[in-house]
Amino acid sequence: MGHDDKVASATLDVAAPADRIFDLIADPARQPTWDGNDNLAEAAEGQRVHAVGDVFSMLISQGAMRDNHVVQFEEGRLIAWRPSEPGLPPPGHLWRWELAPLDDSHTRVTHTYDWSELTDEKRMVRARATDRDALMSSVRRLAALAEGR
Image (cartoon, rainbow, N blue to C red; front, side, top):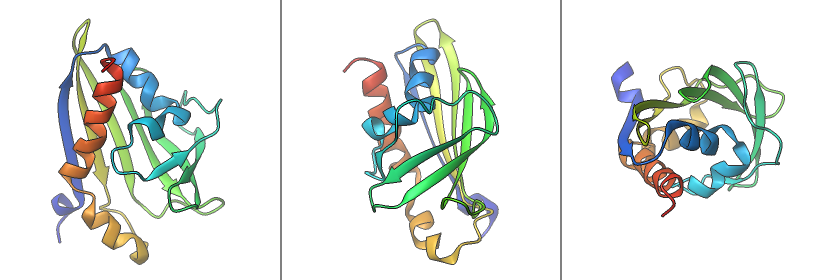
């Protein structure tokens, strides 16, 4: 299986400004409202991401906690993190959101899941199942929130 087989991506043009969309992504407490795969249960308020190096914690729907290590960040445009079990190094998968403003009220949103560096064998089945359709489910829910639908 090559690198390209381990990267899934979904893109959608959204009728909302980039800053509104970005605020829904960069505030972990809001993430469960747009998670289209029912992976995220809840996150404490007050964890808004501001920079590379930030870490936010999330309770996933399976009942475990995850620390999410922010590895890419540009306010209003880009955010990416690597999840891990608390106190452990990330096993190598990455979630990325890229926002490209098309005009003042429209944004191209790209959501990517990259597991090309994943080393944890017990996560491989779920990683393989996270395809474009799974990502698009979250993108569509995010779009609906951002557009006020």
